Length: 155
Image 1 (cartoon, rainbow, N blue to C red):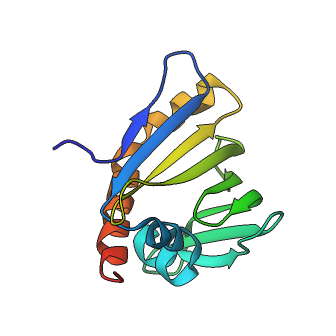
Image 2 (tube, helix red, strand yellow; image 1 turned 90 degrees about the vertical axis):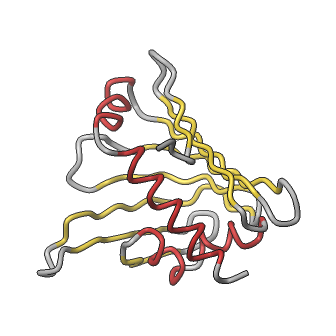
């Protein structure tokens, strides 16, 4: 089955370009990225902090059914323009990937469709390639499918 979320990883480059079109109006797609209650649903994680503003911080955490933390990530917003773009850092705790810089842009395609494009920059090609060895593409596609499903119910 073809994944709807596209990940382009050019050979020898230290970045990824991720794109996905949604059957959602632009404002709703953006809202799904900044409202903690919606983010928690489609990402399947707990939002500990989500300060949607320049220099604001964010922190997500996922636990197993016994309450053990299995994933924690955090970062800082460097640019926050509603319905247009978010520039942020992304760091997974206890992971070898280091800090990434993410440029997320939101684009209106029609009144009822929109697109998200993300440029994710890693410190090195090697770190980017390590990330690609994980089930990263499948996980991101699954999360985006959930985003479409959950936000679609809010239309």
